[in-house]
Image (cartoon, rainbow, N blue to C red; front, side):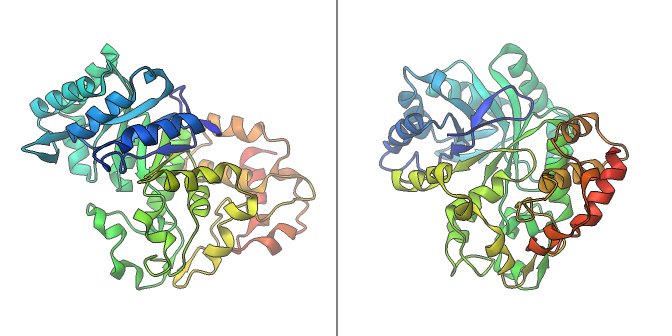
Length: 382
């Protein structure tokens, strides 16, 4: 298992994490089965968005004697009321829900306390200016949560949260179809068939800005919906009109700026092992670029996907990394010092480009790489 820094939290997380969708199945026996497998294969990070007390209790039992083996991302403001899940901003419900969470999980702290499901600017503003944020800050001060996170499907709301300085981790829906869609407060817009009927070209700029902002600010992204609820794995269901493999979806998500961990929503051991196969998949098996280039009605022309098809460079320039740092810097009025440092640490720089054009002949997305190298040299000074 490969491990990555979760932004600036200091946590090292497995790049394949575990979603909680399958925990409730088999009368909640799956919680122990999946966590046993997670420990065996090196998964140390899992998400628990559900407030179902039966699931939380089963997870608590499964964690007995090995709480230190896992980093838990669990959701504040996800409560259980009248026998069903509820997203709440009522401070009394939120406090009671968190207290119950700790009791059922048999722990006295949560590694990442997620503000649950914030998909509108109005909702974020009510949270940050109201008692919910004050309570979350108290939880962090007391050690009941170690880091503050937020889950969202809307890049506008997520960007507002990222820029606020409060959150350290963002749980966000990332896949090559959702990334083309404009911001919406209705999460179902991400998969509505009618939203894929007209030609879609390149990543939504607000999503690109979100990922680059998180990278610049040191906010780690944990990825949900990498498979689009399974739709991307089935050609008859995929909004792209073509099926992708599990490894291609995972690789796409893990190559976005700031991405640290993909939460695999496994319902069975077989599904979990299919995701784990990414860890020893070949470069060819992970390669999503040819599939993307063949999608009908979807085009990434001119947009660098960081797929590294441009390699090898005769001057050994890591073109994908140079382009990523260029994009991060161009989004700001001045070059952030952290971006400059990371660029400077590269073994070879854009100024070494001899403008041979070999990279452009290999790029599936017709990116103007030579022009990007000129801009990077001018911006970074070498």
